[in-house]
Image 1 (cartoon, rainbow, N blue to C red):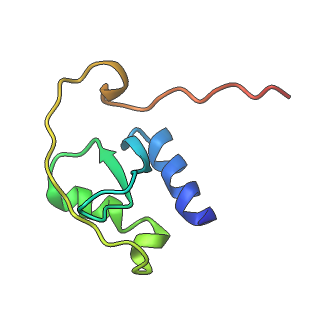
Image 2 (image 1 turned 135 degrees about the horizontal axis):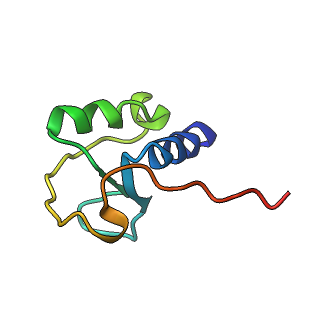
Length: 86
């Protein structure tokens, strides 16, 4: 899952993923969630396929539109990377 986590971090710092993480046990058997900042379903599918675990078929994908106001962590654009403590 190193590639899975690396991809999440890359997409986050590119301003594409706004939320990512595992979900608790649920009736839908969903394992986790990604919230992408994108324009349409096709763009979301493209981003999902950059994940090695999805591309390898380890996870399946359900894409549902979610609309929100561009505020807080949902602002468009790239977040600032934390400075290294070294």
